[in-house]
Amino acid sequence: MSRRPRVAVEDSDGNEIDAGVTCPDATTVAVTLGAATAGRAYLT
Image (cartoon, rainbow, N blue to C red; front, side, top):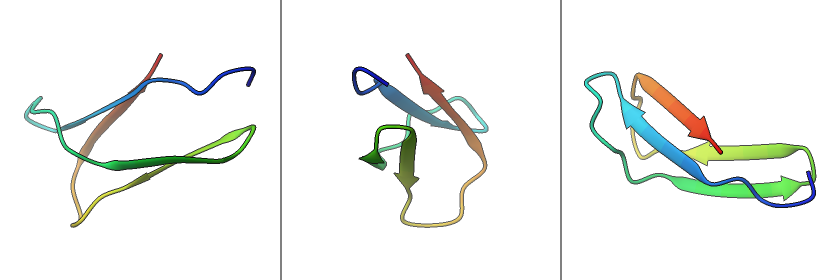
């Protein structure tokens, strides 16, 4: 990736979640949550 993506994380009800997001290398995005949570991550 030439730039870091914007990451939005939401739970299965569509509520935005505050999550830790890191880019450890050029092809990996890691999302860290405080507890097990079902939902989606959107990268733009």
